[in-house]
Image 1 (cartoon, rainbow, N blue to C red):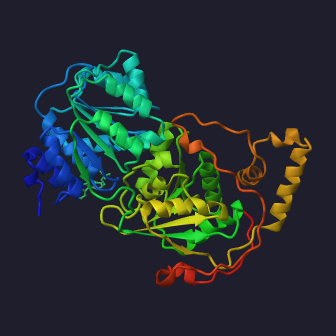
Image 2: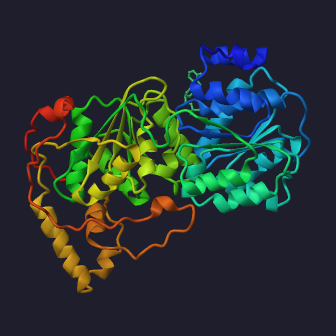
Length: 474
Ligand code: AMP
């Protein structure tokens, strides 16, 4: 069995690894570290949770340990798609580089004051970790020069593609010296990513630790078919699962930022301890919420894909997909927030009849059928709410009530109205993928159908117990 000592790391790094408590390298570390130390370009196909961050940060520390940075001329650059991921990588550097006291690092992320970032750059940094927008901004202000970069890391390349960052990355790569080492990591390798890798990498060594788009072996995942597209019933189904399952803490994913906010308010109103995380919140709110989730002050984190991508939080017991993700690959990423570092995890996806076709794409991607079940006796939506919604809808059509509708709606009223009225079509700009709208559910209330549970022998315990039918109003 390969040990960290076999990988050619220095005593200082080995000591730091020991302090963190790692005993053996993960497969990506075992494969990538020797190549990076040989100064080879690397194409890494690895999901988050595999230890890939240490796979590139550990050897980078070794390479950068000799030599010093000049003011405003960083010696290495790591690009991350989100601020949270950039912060996480910086945290890894702090841990692994603790005995390399001469190495300096700067974090350039949007949403935070530029002045301390600029001051850091002026002192000279060995490792620069950045999100593309802030980096380009500071470059255009003349605060940073990129012609001394010796190691360039593009992390989470497929996410960069989803977020519309590829033009920015191409621009940044064009500012770097051609003689450099490039490390390129992606969880999946769709053709666009493969083409990009071919352009940036020179004779790379490829390291793959799990087949692209496979789901973690420690995660038990299943689908719950809902009888209708009704939003209230969907929230009720989620509340039922949260109460019935042994949920210590959970990520709850929504496809739209607006629904993140609505669902968090609704859960809070029903007594759940929930926070919200999406790309439109200020950076300080995002950081505070994430910290609260990490340290257990919040047990449920309702979030969008962009905010939660790659987050490494140990011991997350559950992931719920309140919406089936539009992109099949996001399914793999979402459920990968649980079952990390050898732990087991549970992922449950709610599926309305309209979302079924998205499930087919996921099953095609992961090349297996996901167990399906139902929640027996799920309560019907409250008839009176439906009637009220229809009345509101017809008033809106006839132009009545304009003034009244302009009031700030109460959370649950907003939920009801959102379901009824289409807001003007929003055309997303690159980087705003999480705001892309799927076709809205109609308020059509389909009659309850009792589908046969199809879990076979794997039927989870919570599905075996019939639920008492209680009428609740949201
Ligand atoms: P990553 O895929 O880089 O986000 O890492 C996922 C998690 O694995 C992080 O919590 C790391 O601290 C942890 N980790 C990384 N390398 C090892 C290792 N060799 N042994 C145990 N845990 C590790």
